[in-house]
Length: 339
Image 1 (cartoon, rainbow, N blue to C red):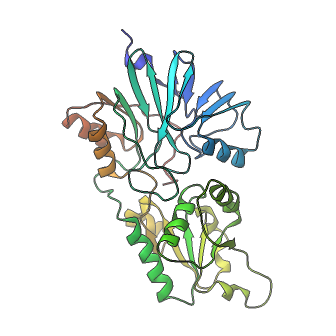
Image 2 (cartoon, one colour):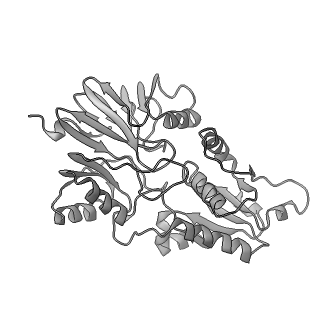
């Protein structure tokens, strides 16, 4: 009888499937990779072959160039692919555009590697799909009871209220270029904000890609300031979205009395907001919070829970109290900052 850890096991390169001879989200170049989504800590260039959703493959090509892999294998959600006798199916993860869980079936067993995920609605991607399995392999970025993310709409309302309160100031929203930025823009549109939103140049390519896949972002324009006198005041009362790294350099100082905002699950921790000099913290995350993580385990009811990275200890202990066998994998190479 095949043991579960003979179907998937942790290695220094990432989760490896010996019978299928492939890796899931490998952190180093490998011959064959199944990639769950386009964030750089999960999707790296240099693999011989990549199986992923069409959107994730497009994201990798946009970020790394068309030659990011020797062989591309786009997979539709819900359609199985046989790899050396192992059935691999991608199902939605609800994390970012194109994100998927990797369902691995072999010898009558089903193991699901979630990649990164969240359970709440996201207008820019397909929502998380619950599927029963023998082993559920989960992230644990926010696996502490203190992390309970508020309603997205309330955070967007905070931003819009501040824009109304300070019409003379530009609101600079720090958001990761893939997923978070487009989600914030789309949530602003749903809240009725139809003015032009200004974006850092580093976000243009990915915003165009989202539009190409049917995610309407509304009027966008480059966040560039003309050389004419007083041009910076053109951004008074405007919303500007840029990557967090841009807020540490002179780019951010170009704008009129900027209100520094940062959208992240870590904004729940006030010390982090203070360290970053954030005036308006927005608790918006693309990762599951404590309740979403625990609800997901209850919904799936796996025989075993394997935890890849994050706050592993608390989730492991919770699972044991629930009667679920849990095992931290302590995989390295995955970040929790694009949150």
